[in-house]
Length: 277
Image 1: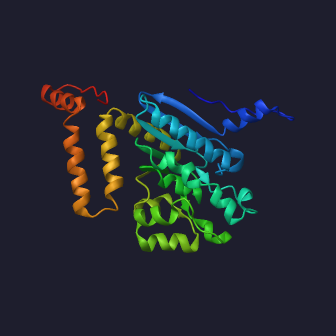
Image 2 (image 1 turned 180 degrees about the vertical axis):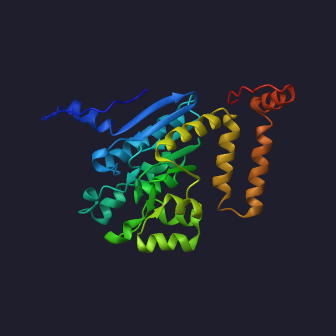
């Protein structure tokens, strides 16, 4: 399914306006178990307007609940991922208004999505765009990609996880350099720092992301979700606690039908068929 963009001519009716707003986010299902979520505000370099954030929140809620979806690819296309927040909507806002926007609730469906999310990043991933990419589990970047937390340059700071996820991804010293200077880093440097999983030519980023998504979607979904849950829960826990979580999750998987199927298929030298049970 694809939500096609609508380009109404003035004056737009309320129905057309709603359709145009919805077209800022496109959802595709290109293969078994794979969904592609594409930000579609090319005229605004995919700036994360309040509407686009709401659409992302709704899309990830929907995809989390869809049993046919096992892996999600998030992209902005070959030109830009997302070039930050919508500054025009922030310029005149006061602290109470910012608090009442409850961005933590809007972004929660992405943060808490139990299914793997692969970010396919080309061009700018600045500010909120970089934070959005860091909400994902794997980041594949094009050669043109660059990452930045430039909020300090306009007198603010990251507010949707940039200070916390970045330091966990690249360490204190690289994170502080990016946060305090606002300068971007290239995809190659981001890969060296550990922010990016792999770098490809721009026109290969989405195909490679889809290839990886299809590979993961063919894996036993309960094991995939348990791995993601344990990794995220264990990263800030003590090693002893994290190892306990790992053991319990591994033990639980021995109660699944997919474990029986996977081991039997291995013994019989055939391809397993996993059902998520």
